[in-house]
Image (cartoon, rainbow, N blue to C red; front, side):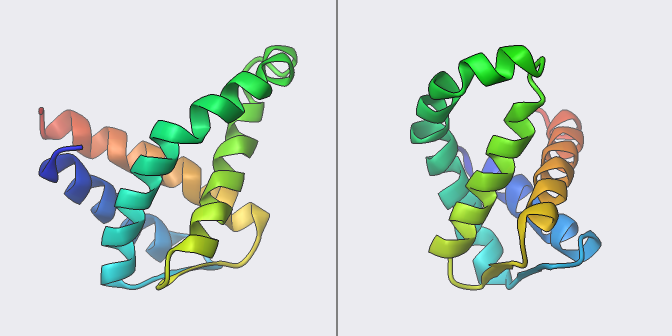
Length: 110
């Protein structure tokens, strides 16, 4: 993960936390969360994706949103300075972070 990608993810986390009620994050928490989410997405998400493949096929991939929300909740338990109030805030937080990261990532080409 490059520094630019890490900072883009941290900014996306800050924007999403500002927009979604039920999510609280500090500046240091956003920076640490960007690293933790990168690690979770690199190591844990592929295993869970493989285990939930039949459900993903039946739901045409929509179950991936549920998996992302659960991984956000896991990160909320690990990272100090990041608080998730429940499933639905985590669900919408994951969507907003993905959209904002994609938007900023397209503006700043790696």
